Length: 358
Image (cartoon, rainbow, N blue to C red):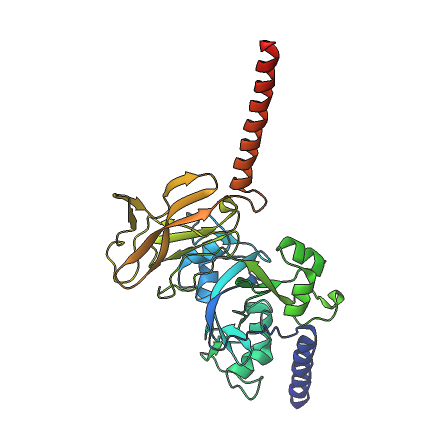
């Protein structure tokens, strides 16, 4: 019996050592001390599950924002089946401290019978963290000793830093077998050099399957006031987000060429202490416009009633005029071209008239 216990202990230590070799800790640089932001990370369940179970595991407060992070239809049920190895993006709050970013004291996992730190890290949370990281942030001196019912903070990697002077949403991409740095960069609208720098990699060949890679996603710009309760509101490309206590839905999609955030009334019942959503209108030119309404459009300029934030009692909106022209197109150039065409045609007509008079 004593020999069996010794052998079991040796095997356990060997297994943990093998795991630490294969599973490298992901540490995302985050220089904005104490800053918070919304981040995304991949999750692949080892077994068939449901969106509801995933929401519970990661303690995503609003189910609709889990849908938005994956660009699922807003009518998708929380009972929607998620197959084994299917990837789901998890939205969570990131906080920067001591040069790195971690999920803000969430999710918290409750230890069940027969759990081990390695199992929790590798299987339950699909390798997003290492067993040693869990031990470190929870002050566990012996990685082989955890108790049933013990609460463990799972420190997901993240960042709130700008990238190349641009505000982005940092996405923890779980690298799949056969992926390349160049291919990932092309898929997500960034460069190989940026990915290598962000992830402190010397060569593209250092990329490993199962690695959590920091990928910067473009975010639509918004008109959110710095005093708003949802500031800064960052919505990544091809995602949507509910804000203002569920009263407003904001989308960053191809309809607006991934530039300005497109917000509109959600049509949902509000959360918290609001019984109904406050007024969501702009006032201008003697008329009232609902958030999301285009009030005027001429040449390359468009005026829209834009969502600008909320507080405990009010939703704010302002008339915002923005250019809708492609960068290469200029309305002035177009007008000048028409003018030159008019002058040219006029000269031609003058010559024709002179010829006929003779």
